[in-house]
Image (cartoon, rainbow, N blue to C red):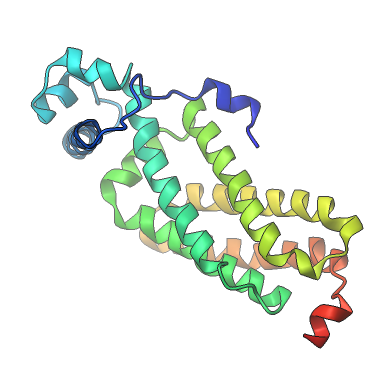
Length: 223
């Protein structure tokens, strides 16, 4: 499923398929992170990235049309890793609804700690918070994560309520993303406090929105 925003996402000019091209893209993204570490997100320039990567600006443009595309690629690396973590967390089907929200709590804390622990990624993520391309990527990532949890936990919900279950999960994931994005811009103490509050709110929303949908199937219980 793709959102309307997906059409506005900034993609690399050249999709790296060969090992050499993939290595060049990695080289460019590492260079961009290095420039951000020194100068900050707002002062990131394509010419500086090219210089840092040891390539010409024309070579840069073969892979990325502008700064936004570079930033989107870095953010997508992060989102891709988080998607992998979520899929791994739900590879084993949860035994109870409480186990589902427990896993989501752990993952939200993990997302926060990843951004908090990587100073460069934190600068990029915070700086690109209003970028339409990054917002689109984050929204598409949310939809993908919703489908993962929906598939893993759908056996708790009757067939006639599955569509509402998906919508409720989408709202909860959106809330969790917003909480992490807010927390990462605060100092360590306030950031962690924000995540703790968000965790309580997530559980309250889960109980209010998900439990009324749940109808444990007799075949699942007997299993």
